[in-house]
Amino acid sequence: MNGEIGSLLDKIKEFRDERDWAQFHNHKDMAISIVLEAAELLEHFQWKNYEEVSKIEEGKKEELMDEIADIFVYLLELADNLGIDIIKAAERKIEKNRAKYPVDKSKGVATKYNRL
Image 1 (cartoon, rainbow, N blue to C red):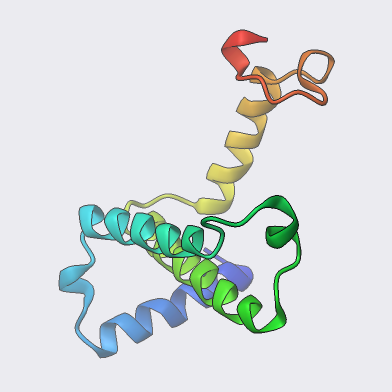
Image 2 (image 1 turned 45 degrees about the vertical axis):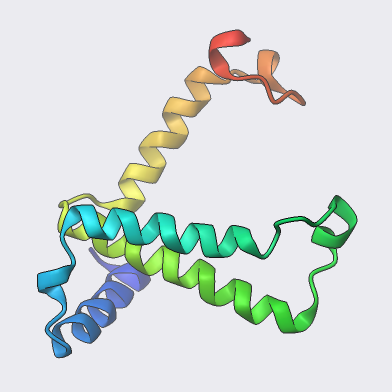
């Protein structure tokens, strides 16, 4: 993988390998880690109403940034471990979603594609 994503992935792998952690980064445990970090992100929004959520305090923004980064790092590494180009996968998924959610049927509604 090239560009900024490739450079970031190299840093992630260097960090992991310096600590001999690749042995713990199997597909199952990486997927679990993504879910756990996503739950930590969600915890910041638990029990808050729309107004509270829309006004994120500056101090909390750094915590949110850390949780989002944790998810992204694990996701990049898992994709790499599985031999998936994450950029191509995202582009492919966007095209699939274009077909599932045509503008004329889905604009302004949150209805699942199979009910449009």
